[in-house]
Every structure is written in structure tokens, then in C-alpha cells.
Length: 415
Figure 1 (cartoon, rainbow, N blue to C red):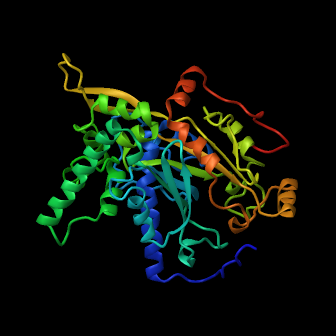
Figure 2 (spheres, helix red, strand yellow; figure 1 turned 90 degrees about the horizontal axis):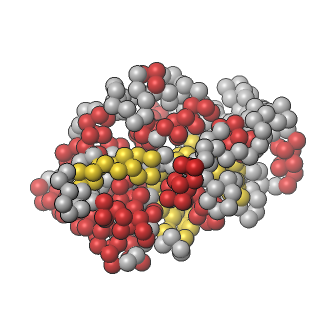
Figure 3 (cartoon, one colour; figure 1 turned 90 degrees about the vertical axis):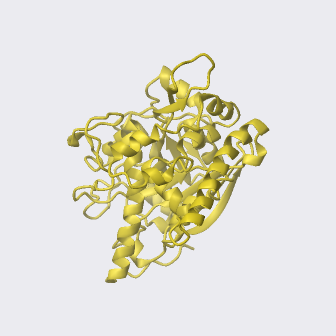
């Protein structure tokens, strides 16, 4: 049985409003730079939520140095907040406590751990967290305003000695910085989760000189610092890439937001009125409407859980440029810019729990409370979604633009 619906109409206290604003700002601090760096992700979001994150009207486009926005001051101009299904992060288990670094940031707001998933072949462990079950964290219908959290880390001790050496170098650097901070500033030294949050906001790497960039006033300056990761060489990146593409991605992105997920079942034609008509009858129609390059890892575009109630799809990750130290003999230049997998966006459909509810929704797709839908995650789905950043999917992106599932218009639904 689903939990009872929450009591509505409660007036929030000033303290509760402050909590809501603080958590909303935290989510934005991860999402906004993510959208700015990854054009496909921004394109998908703007197709589903027109104008909400459109940076082009500010004279700037992703991957451009022209008038980069100051993300510390950037806010949507009156648009309705997007309800993300979940946010996902990656990490090394031996650095900053692994997945607990980012998880700790959200736990301070009342997020609670719900389950663990293990991926033996990838040597990865993940946990997911539910958003606060408080009145201040829900809308007028009692629906959650904030996303689930999906955090993971690679088990470094299970990698080869060569791969471990690359990662433990970062571990030693972070531990050295924390020790120095504790000695010099015992009352103000940041906790691991604070440093992880700041790393995500201004570049994502815990193993650069955090103290020098935390007070940078603009995204442009932080972006320049992102290219100054002098401790990472092409050889180190390739060492990890050959063994664990998950680890290679984490080396150059750190605690950066890996992807956001959009709940297709929560998109309505009349989103600001009664929410009685879904915009898309199912995930497949949404994917066809978006017309983006989708990952086919795992054997198909749409991944379906064994119970049939959780459907997921993701784009192939965008490419980002990264500046490495060139460690090849005989090469004069000190730095080398190289394209590396960036981030992607995921789309989720959570079907109602209960055969009759599913039949009713299929006959007339409309609003069904989130608490009555399939919750959580599925190992086999997540295992395939991880590969959205892997080389095999990147290669497919170079050879074909779009994987089509359905005609753009069917049965009178948009999408």
C-alpha cells in the first residue's frame, strides 16, 4: 500500500521557506553549469521546458567564451521550477569518502538512504536517496519538489596496481590539503562534503588547488581554472580508460554532476492548470519527439526493469575539452587539449503500481501521484545507463545522429 497523501494547505514557516530556498539553490548550483557545458543536455531540457534554461538569449552558447554567465548570480527569470526525477554523481571510494561526499551534502537537508546497487563487472557500488519527506519539500498536491539522489563510486582496490597508482595520487593530494587546512585553520577548515560541493559548483575536481578558485567571482575564471589541472596527464587518463571508463570519467570530472533525469510521466499539456493530460503517453513517444542521439547500450534505447514498471533512456554523452599535461617525450608544449566524454541527460517513466491504475492511465494518461508509482532504481537498467559516457557509445554518435523509435505524432499526442 502506498503511504497516505500528505496534509495540504499548511503555511510554511520562515525557517521552512529558508530550507526550501537553500535546497533549491543547491540543486541549481549543480544543474546550471552542467547545462552550460553540455549542449545536448541543454537542448533536451529546452525542448521539454522552453526558455527555462535558454542561455542563448544572454549572448552565450555552450562551449563558447563569449559572455559566459556568472552562475553564482544566474537564476531563471520567473519560470516555474523543473522537478527533476534524480541527480547522479560519480566518485572514487578512497577520495573524500567516495559517494558519501555528495550524499552528505544532501543528507543535511533530510535526504535518506533507500537502497544499494552493485555492479560487479564495472567494480562500482551505488546508493540512492529519497528527498525530504517534509511539507516544505512538497508542492500544493503533496508531490516532491526535489529530486532523488543517485551516487556511486568505483572500488579502487579492485583495479590494477597501475590504475590504483593514478587514483591514489589524487587521494594523497586531497588528504594533504585537508591536513594543511586543519593545521592552519582549525576553526574554519572545510569538511569533505563542503569541498565536494564547491568542487562540483566550480569545476568538479577535488584534486586541484581548491583554495585558489573557491572565491573566483565568475564562471569564466572558474572555467579557466578547470583547464589548469596540472596533475593529470594523457597517459594517466588512458591508463584508467583502458580498464575502467567509469574511473577515467571521474578522473577528469570528479564530483561534477554526471546527469539529470527528467520524469516523463510528470510532463503535462496543462502543467500550470489541472494536470489532467500527459504530454506524452509513454517514454518512447518522448524520445521520438526529442530527436536526439540516444544511447543503445544494453541492447536498446529504452531500458525496462524486470517488473516492467521502470523505463529509462539516455542520450549519448556530449564531448568536453580537457587540458592535460603532455607527458610524451620530445613534445615541447606543456599542455594538450583533448576531447573527453562529458555528461548526458536521462529520461524516466515510472509506471503506477497496480494493474488497474496502469490500465486507467493507459486508457487516459493523466496525473497519478508519485507515491503511487514505481520508486527506486534497477541494477540492469543503471548498468546500461552508466555506459552513456563510454567509448562504444561515443563511436556510435560519430557515425549516426538519431536513433528513431516512433513517428513524431501518434494517437493525437504531442511527441
